[in-house]
Structure formats: structure tokens, C-alpha cells
Length: 232
Image (cartoon, rainbow, N blue to C red):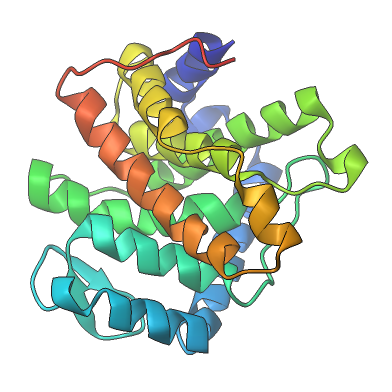
């Protein structure tokens, strides 16, 4: 199934997406950006920014809403925290907090891909990447019936959807996409449940770490490195 989903990511074109889903994707994007704007002013994001201070000041990525610059790998951590901390992310009826994972990662990828590959992207390309990542996430949820048990998107699934979306934005083929997802899957665990049980800050912080790991997985796979691909 992992390779079949990666093929879906590679082959889906903007023209394949129904018009009503394009509108839903636009709304989800705007909703998540609004949540990130609020999240940027929270105490948790302020503390996370202080923790990243040694890495701030130089790099290819703007840290949105904070007026700072850093590497994309570090910016992804802060952007994920911004989306997660207000706890207002969208909830898909069968897919959990889809956009909370994917949107911050894709926004961070824009500067990374421009710096490393000289690539810029149209709105259609960005929306297509979002939709295929969200579709991956929703299909996984539907298979495992997460929402029927009142469970949101677990970290090890969200990071795979992150990597899938970021791979599609860069135009990677199915083999590289599944390897990017495999790298990201291997770097994360099922431990997020414990952070929820103990009501710690780890859930929000991990949202950013997952996005950072996803971008690193894409870069590794793009350069031909391989990972386990039978993670389903």
C-alpha cells in the first residue's frame, strides 16, 4: 500500500482534483495560516524560539510572523508549533488534524526548495501537494478507524503525510516519495500518546519536529538514499 499511495502522490494532477475539493483545500490553508498567526504569539512558541536562538539569524527560511531567519529544518519546528499550540486545527471527519501537520511543512518547503533547487511554485502546484498529502492521511485514518475511536492524527502518521506532500511539491517520483516517507516514519514513534496522557508540551513541539524530519527525509530520498518502504 505504501508504494500505491506514493504513486497516487506522483500521478495526481491539479486537474484531477474536483472543484469543490480545491475550494476546501484553499479554506484549510487559510484556516491553518490564521491559527499559526495566533500560535506565533503564544508562550510555548516564545519558549521554543528562545531554545532555537543559537540557530536563528542566518538561513534560507523566514520564520513566519516572528521576523527572524534560520534554516528550513529549524523553521519547520517553529512553524509546526505555531499550528499546534492554539489547539484550533481543522478536524477532518475521517482524517483528524490533517492541515495542522501538512500546511506548516509545505510553507517551510517553499524557501528550502528555492534555496537548494532554485525552484518556485504556482498556487496550483502548492494546492496539489496539500491535497495528495491530505488524501494519504485520510486513507490511513479510514483504514485504521482512528476517528471512530475518538483519536486524532498520531505523530508517526502525520509525519508520513508531511513527507508525501513535500515530495509531491518537489515533483519526486513514487520511488523517491516512498523512501522519503520511510525515512520520516523511522525517525518517529508512537510515543505521542503518552505526551497527551501526561498533558505535556511535547505534542505541540513534536508537530514541528515531525515537519522538520519530513523535510530531511525528502532531501535524503531526493539524493538517492534509501529507507524501509514496507511500513504498512
